[in-house]
Image 1: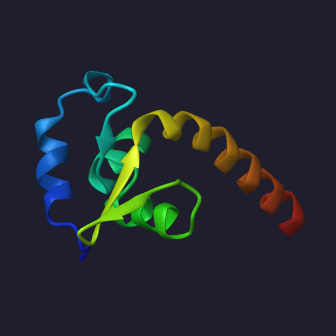
Image 2 (image 1 turned 90 degrees about the vertical axis):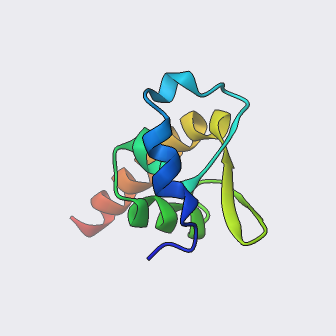
Image 3 (image 1 turned 90 degrees about the horizontal axis):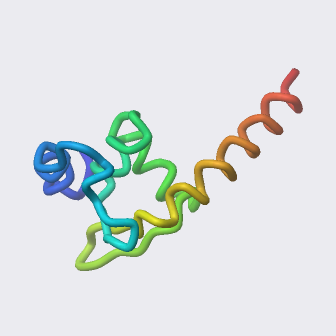
Length: 86
């Protein structure tokens, strides 16, 4: 289970990701909703440093404006890995 129990509760409070301001700080659960992946996958991206994040009192937090930048970088890295494995 993810160390941040608030994440799943916060995702339910956000009806649309567009409702979150670009400069807002969000949780791993909200990142999962943004990328449409599981919370565990989002947590792995954060812990692996693919998404810049910081911890406050043991809970990961992410600046939403960084996610769009990360998406392109993640796509490029994954494509390169797939080419290397082919």
